[in-house]
Every structure is written in C-alpha cells, then in structure tokens.
Length: 253
Image (cartoon, rainbow, N blue to C red; front, side, top):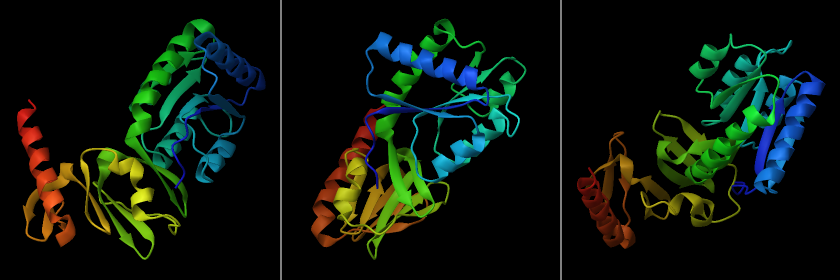
C-alpha cells in the first residue's frame, strides 16, 4: 500500500497544446500566489494516456478535463475515472456551456468556460485545495493487482487478514484484495485505525463500528449480516469501545 502522498497532484487533459500549456501556467501562477510549493502537474493530450496512467497505479488528487476532444469527450473520460476511483475531484473545462448538465450529472466539482484565466481558475483551485485537505484523510489507498484503489473510509465494513493478504469488504458488497503484505496487519491498516470508528476485534479482523448492530460473547454482529469474531484477549477493549461508540451516537442530535 502506498502512503497517502502529501504533494498535491493535478492531472490536466486537453488535446489542444496551447490550452494545455495555458492551464498549466495558470496553475503555476496560483501556486506562487498561494505559496503552495508542494504541487505537481501532469499534462496529457490524450484521454487514453491519462486512463492508462491511472489504471497503472498513478494517483492524482485533482483532474482538469477538457470536454471537446476528438478521441473521447471529457464527459466520457470523467465517467471512466469515476469507475476507477472513489469520488475523484473533477473540473471540466470547455468553450461551451452546452455540457454543463452532463458534467454535474457526474458530480463534477466545477465547470470553467474557456479561456482559462486567473479570474476563473484561481477561485476554483482555492476551493479544490480546501476540499482536498478535507478529503485526503478520509480515503484509504489500497494497492491491488488491478492498480491503486481509493477507498472512502465510510464504505469499509470490515477488513480481514487471510494468508498475508488484506481483504476489504465494502458496504455495496464489493470485495477487494490487497497484494501480499510485507508489513504487519496493524501497520498496513494504520491509516484506518487512526479513525475512532474502526476497531480491531481479533488479530485478523478490523471492523467499522458504523455497521455494528450487536455485541455478544465472541462475536460482533453487523448490519450487513456478518458476524465478526471477537478474540478473548480483545474482548474487554472491544466491549468498552462498543459501549462508548453507541453512547456517543445517542448523545449526538
């Protein structure tokens, strides 16, 4: 598993080399204006090259996609990115407002009309940077045989260690497997275990208490119908955390 990178990584895709260079230069001006040195810009003239990069495991935090491209529209590219990534931050760029409804159907973060300038890009980058800071601590990066997957923490029901492979079970029924772990289970899931709603119940199980429904001797039942084993050595801590969690839930309006 790759660690969550601190450097903000932007991917720009535009078949027009002049517009591509202009957008890149405007982003660099924003970096200087905001004193934001930790940023890397990746430029693509082909949507297929960007998709190959993402499928190959490259992680990008923000995507700026031109809509009118000959090989594939930015809308189609955005659809494919949403299948590969969890909640990608996408800004569409176009010379026309005609694609506005399609862009926001795909939960676009924003829509900019060309020409790109400080006036229309700087405010969007300010908001993107803020959203990125909020989002980066709520996503787990899982390296699988198909590449790196960004998993929103709230979708993880539980994790199980089997034969040095971490199995993630998600709320929509998806089952994902990591590559062979060369580190311990605790170390691998450290970014997840930092969040208070995740709890280790066994040497081989970590559970999201948001999906818990009942604690009995030896098992924690989940709303998904799963029963997760609670090891004897973990029982006292699990019981206390379970009680504390639900007491807090009752207190919150």
